[in-house]
Image 1 (cartoon, rainbow, N blue to C red):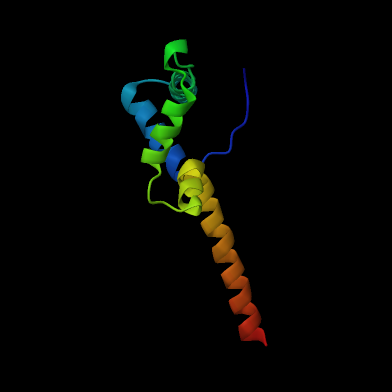
Image 2 (cartoon, helix red, strand yellow):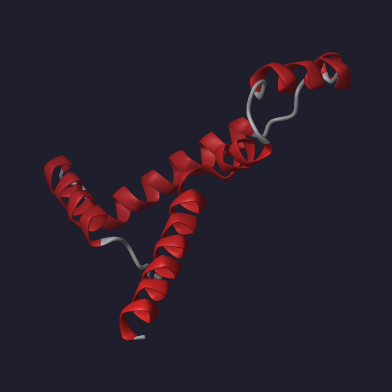
Length: 105
């Protein structure tokens, strides 16, 4: 299937070089990468066996995993680097806008 993707310039250059070094086409490299990501996510989402589905056990694991962290820290971790990066960019844009207003006043 043919499609159009927007890819970060640096990532594109790295992928193009990797494809050339391995003797494959760019579309093959992209397809392979997508398969790997989707397979990883599928494995991560496989349900636990019935005998391991214990809500109390899960609650205990979560308490240990997130002990000593604020809810904001937990949410940042769950959101991951992409959403955190977007939030940082939004905050930087807000600060830049405030600074521009202060300079023009």
